[in-house]
Length: 161
Length: 75
Image (cartoon, rainbow over all chains, first blue to last red; front, side, top):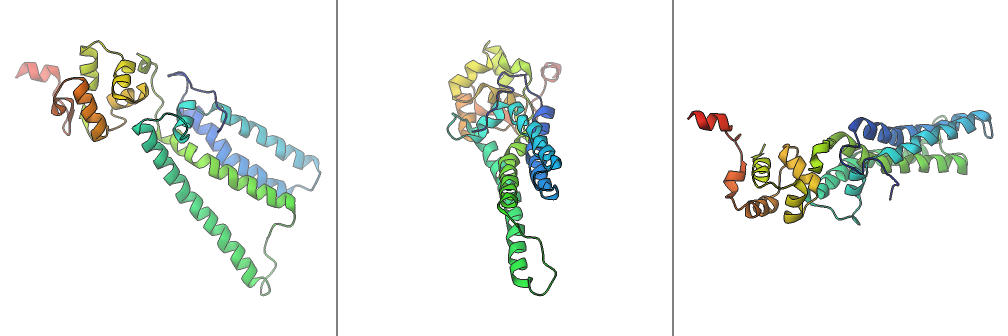
C-alpha cells in the first residue's frame, strides 16, 4: 500500500496536487532511472540523477487518500469506488500491455537480427537491469493513480454536511 | 445523463450526507458526487435511496431534467 496522508479530510485536496504527484511518479521516476544509463558509473552526475528521484517519490505523500483507498481491495469500498478502481486498472493495463509488448518485441528483434545489424541496445549489467525494472514498476504503480487523479473531481468542503 | 433530486429530498428531511450514506451503505462522498451529477447510481443504490426517502423512484431519478420550482409554480 502506498503511504499517503494527503486529503483525508474532505476539501483538503485538489486535483492539481494529485495530478502533479502522479505525473512525477509515472513519468519523472522512470525517466530519472533510465537517465542514469547516460551518467558514468560512480560519477557525481549519477548521484544527482538518483537524488532527483526523491522529490518525485515524495509526491506519493501528496496523493489524496480518498483516491488511494479506491485501489485497495482491503478497504471498505462502495459501488462508485469499485467502479472507478475497475476503470483505472483497465486504463493502466491497456497502456501497460502495449508497453510490455513493445519491450518484448524489441528483445525478440534484437535476438533475431543481432548478427545482421549494428549491435542494438540490451542491458549490459545488473545496474541497468535494475533501473529498467525500477522504471517499469513505477509506470505500473502510477498509471491507475494518474487516471483517478484526472477523472475524479475533488469534493467541495460542503460534502461534510 | 441521469438527473436526480437526492439533495432536495435530503434537505427536506433535514438529513446530512453522512446519514443518508449510512442508511444506504455507501461512502458519504458518494452522496455528494451523486447530488452534483458526477456519478450515476446503480439500480440497486437507486432502489435503496427510493426506499429510504419513501418516494417512488421516478420522483427521485429522471432521464430528463426535473422542472424547477419556479416553472412548476408558474403553470
